[in-house]
Image 1 (cartoon, one colour):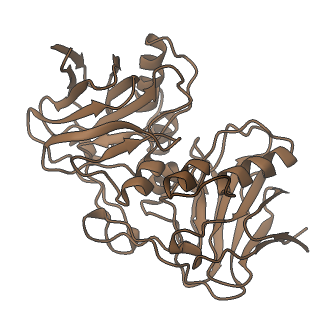
Image 2: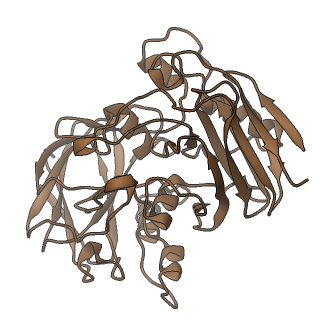
Length: 197
Length: 197
């Protein structure tokens, strides 16, 4: 068993083999984990939120259902959910432009840059930027399709277990968002726990 | 005024200048129009559904609100909506893999291929495949985030008016989907009407 610590506001990646399981853990609670998966031998294939929504006819898969790629092939399965069951798959990763738009002056860490750095560390410096699986993120869909921005409802140690359906590169970013409430304005670490190998 | 007819199951593109308005018209009614917009001088910037949802805090913009790019800049504004007001921005464009998954044997027209062909005709054969603005498409979000697949509620001649906020390449595909009910299983034409120039 290998544990990869993802410090607050940073990202980390791992190679995960087909059939292998891993957990994404909210170490202290109340923290969003932006999660990405790319096919290991061809990173132009990656998890696609818009294809997954069509595949499962839901905004987010239920336990037992897959996340599929932009070629509509399963890449991850949501095997276990030891959280309150609230996750988001509607929102883009935060990026430098997001923080500029929120009034931040100068550089601010972002999930997009965390993704790019982690993928470069895995040997893949040239990627498309997919929409993430925003684990633990609480974006309720209200009347007329209005979105809320609520704090993640996870407690310390809450986790999901995912199973890889193909050899893939997985990146998890401990979201640095501290302007809106999703991380209770105090970003904290997450962890990736690789099981079965 | 220029009208570009988009035959049933096909796609067409146009160059639209910043400030120019155009209409997307459901000619016979009950037909989905997958709509895409790319920055004219750099097609790596394009309308991004996941960035727009964050920008407007809604599943779809209201009249007067923008669609933004993957760099969070307005590219289109929804200026007028002469339809029942139902559109989708959750679902990927249909593609060959979608029809294979639905049990179709052999080739079936798709919005993805329509997009690629129209962009190649505009001189851009190498593009990322963004999630479309699915005008007129009726995908209700039900309890627990379950998605419905309903027929477009538009009548003959219903349209939206969009204004370009930057020079862009716009592609509209008259969705060829005839297996699920979104086009009442009988795809029909749409039209693009270029105003102001």
